[in-house]
Image 1 (cartoon, rainbow, N blue to C red):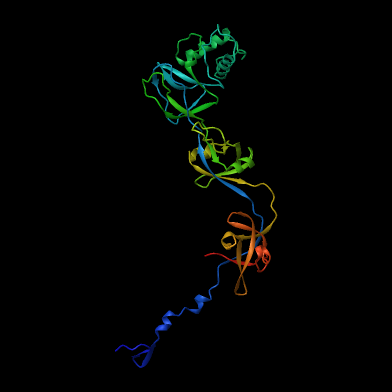
Image 2 (cartoon, rainbow, N blue to C red):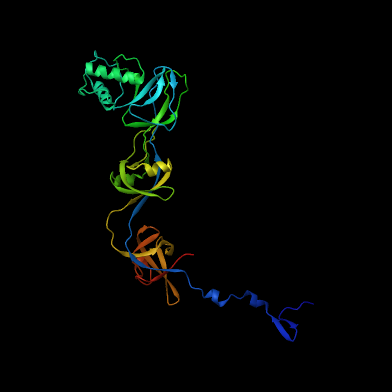
Length: 352
C-alpha cells in the first residue's frame, strides 16, 4: 500500500526527510527581485517627421521616333551629354541637343526668323561651331556652322538643318533607361530616357504637404547608414489627374543632391528622410515610451518605484519622439486620477 505524506529514507548513518511541497515553493529572492527602472529626465525633445523615400532618376520618357532605319542603338544606363550621339538612323548619328522645345521644321537661309533658329545657334555655339550673334536669324554664318557640324558627324554637308538629326532635351544630358527598339526597326522610338542625376522622392500626407516648403532642411539616410544633409527641392500638393478615371496624384516631396557621389554608389534604393522641427522647445520632464501604460479611459500612466513600493500615477503626454515621451502633467488631478507628481530623478518602471 502506498502511503501519502512524509517519506523517511535512511541513508547511511543519517536520515533524509522528503517533503514534496517544498518543490513547489518559490525562492524568496525571486519574489523580491527589483523591477527594471529608468530615471525621469529633464530634457528637450525635437519633433521629427520621418518619411519613406526612394532614390530615382525620375520618370522615363520615350525618345522621339527615328525618321529612318535604326542602325545603332544606345546602351541601357548610358549617360549622353549634349553634342554626343544618342543612336544612328540610316547610318548617320542622331545627337543630343539642349533646348526647351522640339525642332519642327527644316532650317536654312530661306527660313524666317524664330526661336528654333536661336536654339540651334545656341547649341552650335556651345559645341564651338558658331561664333556669330545668337539672334534667331539664319544667315551665312549659321549655314557655315551647320555645315561644319555636319562634317564633324560624317553627314552630308548641306548647310540645312533637319529636325530628325537631333534629340532635344531640356537638360545638359540624358540617361538611357531602357532600349525599346531593335536594329533595323523603322519609325520607332529607340529608347526611353531619364535625368542623369539621382533624386529622392517621398510621399506626403495632405497635412505634411501644407506644412513643408521647398528649402526645408532634411537628412537622407542611405541603407548603409550614411547620412546626407540637404534640403527639400520641391513640394507637390498632388491632386492632379492621372488619366486613370478620377484618380489623382498623391502629395510628394522631391530632394536633390548637389554631390552625386554618395547616392550614385547606393543606386536606386529606398531611403529614410528625416525632417527636423527647427522650433525651439523648452526642457520638460521626459520618460522612455516603454514606461507608459495605457489606461482604460484612453489615457496613460506610469509606475513610480520608490522605497520598495510601486505606485501608479496618471500622466498627460506632450511630444513623443526618439522613443521618449514628454510629460506635461502628472499625479492627482490628471484625468481624475491620483498619485504622486513626477519630478526629475524619479524612477519609473519599464515594461520587460
